Length: 559
Image 1 (cartoon, rainbow, N blue to C red):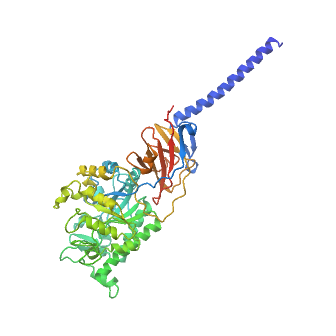
Image 2 (cartoon, rainbow, N blue to C red):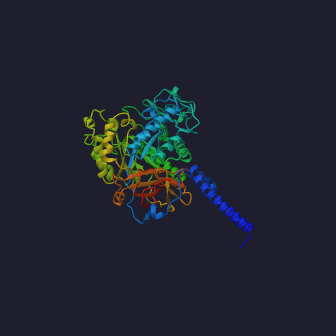
């Protein structure tokens, strides 16, 4: 039997030891819980920077209690081009006023994007050069008066308007196609409206006066080099998805008015070459050189053109369409569209078929069929003209189903991969009932844009993430930062496997832009308690990675 004082010392030592262990345990638990509640648990981010995880992220429960990964082959995501032209020339669509403060212009642009996003559109074609000007800081053109109220005047902001527009489009899962008008130099003959930095003053020998405007002379090699430099500047400095030209090449002909390029033809035309063939060659050279320039800088950037809807009339050429158009691409605008396609100088084409389904002189039905048969392995989207709805001598446009019916025809016609609409305000400020019909009949499900670069290989497969509770749902947590080649995440959420396979009306689809904030932790923005989730990624070329499928096995209860 030990003395009492030894017993007392032993008991004291045991109490102290237990108390110390208890404090250590409390310290650990308290620190971890506190850090999670404050959102200060840190991991390693890009370039070794610390990354703060969101405050509601909690420890993942055992995987079988929460979710499981399924070995399942999904059909590829559906694809279709759904674009809208946003015209800035003369402030047709945006900005509503060139004298509005830039913050007001931003608000209006966001509303426009949000509206077309709500209709499940997936691309905007935004005019960034109207007539020798620019909606961005350029070494080759002055600021546009349609943006600032006075040509050459910088907008009152520290932001780059074009960078901002591109980012806002991408944040909504929309492709941004930068639309430039190459040859139109002015909108009228009032040169007092022009900046001293405009090419009209810097290079007067480049200009040809025709009817009520000035044009760049397409026959001059220095003009072509200048236009190529303008495109290179945009592609180098901006994260655009495409460069886009409209239908203005040589100007639409005006009766008894001559385009005065005779001296240029005499200097540069080849012996025995006809004037018309020389003009077509000038335009084709620009198209070819623009394509080569784009691909040398960023091969994933697309090049698309939206020509006039009629190549040639059948009465002139047996290969032409059964139409009686007053002017045509080949004969009047000197746009040799078929040659561009056959030589792969363009990635997509949007012929402007702005006529009603059975219009006598140029039937929409006839022209869709013609372009389908002459697609030459080029992606063809159809240009539709809702600006004519309830505003045209052709009474077919009084029928609110005219445009939805045209889209229905596009969807069942071979080699047609989507549609674009001129212009944004025609279904935004007017004719919203037609936009609703378009949505209900054709656009209820979100889709990806077409796979333009089918010959390019996919990027390397991303590593499989784990799912962790987050906010009111969960998030994908990746073992390392996602490859910078991936630009978007695609998430499909469905109640059943069958719904997921079909991507039907029960499936919710999100296309999420990947920036520095979500390349290690990607929240899933879905309704409560989804059952099946598919995750894939789109790289710069628009290639989709193999979808990873997860089954959520229990309702999440966050602490």
